[in-house]
Every structure is written in C-alpha cells, then in structure tokens.
Amino acid sequence: MTELEPVEVLLDRIASELEAKRLERPLMIGIHTGGVWVAQRLHERLGLPEPLGTLDIAFHRDDFSRIGMQPQVRPSRLPFDVDDRHVILVDDVLYTGRTVRAALNEIFDYGRPASVLLAVLVDRGGRELPIAADVTGQRLELPPGQQLKLQGPDPLSMVIRAQA
Amino acid sequence: MNLQLDQDGRLRHFLTVEGLPPALLTQILDTAESFSSVIGKSVKKVPLLRGRTVMNLFFEASTRTRTTFELAAKRLSADVINLDISTSSAVKGESLLDTLWTLEAMQCDMFVVRHRDSGAAHFIARHVRPGVSVINAGDGRHAHPTQAMLDMFTIRQHKGDFAPLVVAIVGDILHSRVARSQIHALNALGVAEVRVIGPRTLLPRDIDDLGARVFYDMRSGLRDVDVVCMLRLQRERMEGALLPSEAEFFRRYGLTEDKLALAKPDAIVMHPGPINRGVEIDSAVADGPRSVILPQVTNGIAVRMAVMSLAMQATGEAA
Image (cartoon, rainbow over all chains, first blue to last red; front, side, top):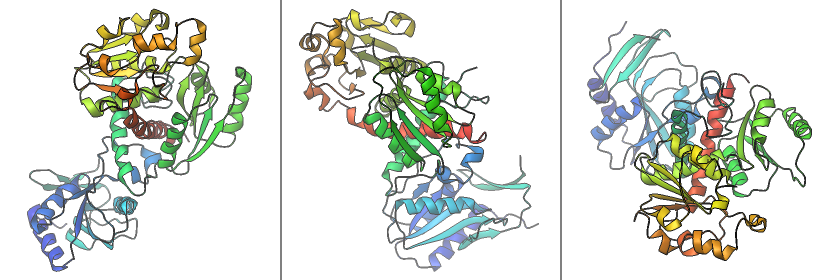
C-alpha cells in the first residue's frame, strides 16, 4: 500500500496546481470540518482577497431518514455572492462522492456559479457517484473497512484506522 | 415512559416543554440556530423532509402560528396541508379520532395541532400510528411549546447565557398556555429567577409549584429584570368580571416606557402576539428599540424547523 505523504506536501502540491489554472477571481469554499481546515491553508497560500466560505452539508445529506440529524450542525457561511463566479470547493477526503453531491446542491441554493472546481487532499477511491476531483493532493486505494481521517486543526495530519 | 420521547430518548412528539431534559431543549435551540442561516440563501429550502407530508390541524383560529409552521415545513421541503376546522361546539373525542384516522389514511407523517381544549395534542399523540409525529401548536390553557422555545431562542440570541437572567412574565398568566410553557422552559434552562406579574384574579393557584416568584405590583416586579415577556390579554375575559376595565388594566399592568425604565437598561421586551396596543403594551414600547417582537416571529420559523426535523428523524426508522 502507498504511504501517506505529509499534509504540508499535499497542500503545496494542490496550491501550485490551483495557481497553474489561472482562475479569474476565484472564491474558495471548504466543507465542514476537515475541508475547512484544508481550505484555510490553501486560502492563505493562494492569498485570495475574499473571505473563505464554509459549508455544512448536514441538511443536504441523503441519509437523513436513515441516520437522522447530525450532532452539531454548524451554519454554512458564504460571505459573498456566488453568481457567475469561479468556485474552488475544498474537502479533505474524497470517498463515495455523496458529500460533494450534497455540497453542490447547497452551493446552488445560494446562486449560480460560473464554474465549480473540486480540490481534495486525498482521493481514496470507492466512488458511488459520477464525481471526480479536479485537483488531488494524493491518490490511494483504501479498502472499505478502513477510514481515512484528517486530524487537526493544528497541526494537520492524516491517519488511517479500522472503521469503528 | 415519556410519551414525547422514543426509546433512545429522541424527540418523537413535541407536546409540552414540561418534563423534557434540558439537553434536548438546548439541542432544539442549537438546531434552530443552524436553520436560521437558511434564511440567508436565495433558495430558502433544505431537503430534509422531502417526500414527507405535514398536516396543520387547526381547530382554533391562528394566523402567525399556522403561517410560520407552514413556512417551516415548506423550508424543510415537506408537503403541507392546512386544515382549518371550525369548532362552534367542543369536538367530541370520537369525532376527533375519526378525523385523525381519515387523515392518517392519507399517509401523512406529522400533525401540527392547535385546539381549544387542554390535552388535545396529547390525546392525538396517544392514538396516532407509529411513525407519525404530533406537534402541539397550542392546546387550551395548557401548553404552547414551540412559542416558548422561540422565546428561549430569542432570549439566547440577545443575552447569550441563561444562568444570570431574571425574566418577568406579565399579564394574564391564568389563561396563558404561553406563560406555562415559558416558565417550564426558563426553569429547565436554568435562569436565575422567573417572575410573574399580574392581578390576583389572573394568576393560577398552582403558580408556586411552577417555580415563579409572584408580584402583584408591576413596578416592583420589573425592577432590574433582563427580559420582559408580555402576554396578550384575552379581551373576552373582560366580561368574566376578572378585570375591572381595559383602561384600569393598562394603568396597572400595561407596559409603558415609564415602567420599563425600572428594568435593566439593556432589557428586551417580548410578546407572543397579536398585540393589543394600549391594553397590555404601549405602542412606544412595542415599536421601540428594546422590543424584539418582530425578531420573535422570524425566529419562530427556524425553531419550528428544528422541532419538526428532530421529531421526524426519530420516526424515520419506524416509517
């Protein structure tokens, strides 16, 4: 199995790939909780002038009727108008794709962005929806029984553990 | 076992604040806070109750409560049916059950019930099939729990912590389901002191058991309070010889700038509405800088969204 690279290395890689895209006045949105930590680092590295947006997708999940309300839903904060803007959506781990599906739905409740680009720290495979990241720090294949978790907020580190 | 909770202690029906664990009340407030951000979006909707059907069952007239329940359900993406069932005479138990079973046969998931009789929502909750939730939108003189929770939400929004607060509830406590629910909620959330202010004839006999300090004189009762909760004077009570006249009531228990000056400088003024200007509250106060009467209405939507979604998650597995 591939070794996990240090988070700082992954962040540098993502930041430089995002810079290479030369997006016009991009906005950045992180998904709670790990995605926000990653987005804070990237937002700083890219020196984006507008504040970072945060999204809690708990109200848009597709498993509400099965597992119910999430404890501690933090309000989503998008302190800008997303209409006609290029949005960089950031999450820590890309797995089934359901979180990203929910996040896209929520973003479109605020307006109609010109484009949305997905940046993730780690893509661990196991997709259940037709969703792909545009910028990925690292790719690895993890069996379903294992959980990849970002610990933070300071410092950030990735850990692999057996699913509870 | 508490009829309101499922076996895991989650909210299944919301009938009264009385007897609910404080942590659950805090969960309602926290969830409502998250929902209040939904109002800032251009699409003011979340899909939590998509495909669910909510029936607003109003046996007693109401505009703001019914409208905010309807809006709350719609913002959760539920389908909403409003049924205004007039009651010239009290609805008999049997016909109420027939109504209920007919509506259940239409596969609804939640009843929001307002009824003139105390205990009506409990009665319905005892008879609905598993998987159906009942929310009390006011029953007789008994309880109006979502109003109390939106009041708690408004207090927390302005004051932060409940612990140091002195809260005064003023007016017709005897006939007020709002006052009863407020007293239970304030005590559960641990305020420093709950005061009730009103004439002897409009205070319930069990007021001491409810956990409130009684004041017959408004000026002494308002001294140094953080929150003033005014109640609507039910004008129809005037004829029952419980009160001399509206003018006399206003003179003694109407909230004026002059009386409000005795409260803390940053005290807020609440009222469940609809307000009787010049009877229980002066227009200068109702429209003044310390009034949070309109924010209460706005908060009512988020709080009702919270209660509905929490109740539906508990029943979700059974459905």
